[in-house]
Image 1 (cartoon, rainbow over the protein chains, first blue to last red):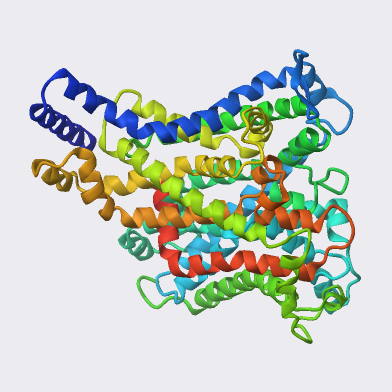
Image 2 (image 1 turned 180 degrees about the vertical axis):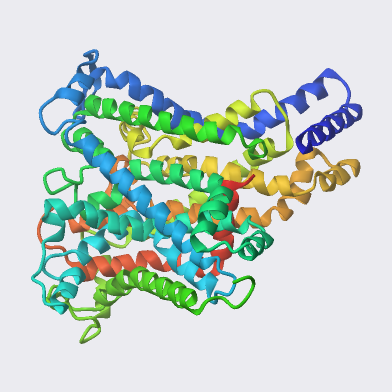
Length: 320
Length: 281
């Protein structure tokens, strides 16, 4: 209803302005204005976002070496064949396994921690809400590379804080980031430290959209903590949760700088997420065409995720 | 239970969790800060000391005097961040205004295209962007870096500015129109001052974003005197050998200081920008 009324208002306004200026020249000027306003931003987006995305497809079918960029040689689908069934390490084994592990772990920990803290911070009697929220969000604004070094230092076998804590409780030191079973959990701890505050802020935005009376009514009906979460909080913040999940997923897929500085993908590819693999293959081993093929695979996976995102948002008419 | 007093156990639980998580957030920050004041020997000793025996403020000067780091990286980061803020504000004020105030052919399609391209992970754009930059002379140029940082803020910026413009009543602009101002004139004199909080939020977000970028400068710059501090510290640490944690920590603290300042002053703006921008509607 609201949208219809708004559109009618818009039409009336447009007619009003047609009444104000006449003639084809004035008409053209009026019609072209929004495009001219958009032009600078759009030009940059097309040049630096759309073109690279498309050209990755072209380069992925070629053999391009870092040292000889201007001499691409057409090789068909060979890059993709090598990607999927080449010798270890290839994209399936272990990169896809590591990446799926990483993305699922990072997203669940980040969103779960964020949601849990948001519910606690939303308690009406709580004191110091802004302080807690600020403190929890702060790690999110620090550069990924700095976060990576700081946590690598914490897990340093020789001088790190983690081993100092173990020593306090009488346990022997551990070589955290060089132990194949421990490297990924350490990475997940660091990524949660970094990103949970962002989820928290989004979820709090969702919780604040619930009117106080609903909580009161639910309390009157005798709803306890858990059923409150299940039947009231989750349904109301569902759209916020979905956005949060997808933003977190894309960010996890995009992980690069803090993994590079924390573990370098080691030990033996145990934390070599797909972005790191792409960088190593293209810029350290110089296989640009192969790197482009990896990019294409990342794009396809992201498109599938994005379609889900758009599908969810299409239903929310007010969003646009 | 009803609206009676909140159960005490629940209160104790809530505060305990929040305080425990606060410690989890704080300890790494304090640990790095403490290390930045230690001597080299103390920073590498085991078990580590919680607080330095003696203060070594020279750690904050050493990177600037060293050959691998030098005085330029932080200066470069400031230049890149300010350039990005300026360009982002100009471009997204225009694009946000267009999406908020005009109905035109292809509006929805363009908006979705911008959001869609933004969803494509940046790591996958490394290779094609590298080729683009080398081919068209943008490789190792400051302009190329600022343009790229700006492009990455266009979707969020457009979204935030559109949101702020949507909240400003059109009637105000129409008054100006009746008074004989042009539509763009009304943008400048009426709408823009009212959208100042949006511009402020976007400026803070853009600065923080540009300040922290690492990956693109890593592959798109080669001159040592053009790299931002993120790449400089990466080169300083190097690939092998023991890391000089006291120096790395000092650089980390310096890099975080402007963020702390912005954060303390603009926390509310930042939060409203994030939620308003990401979740409007």
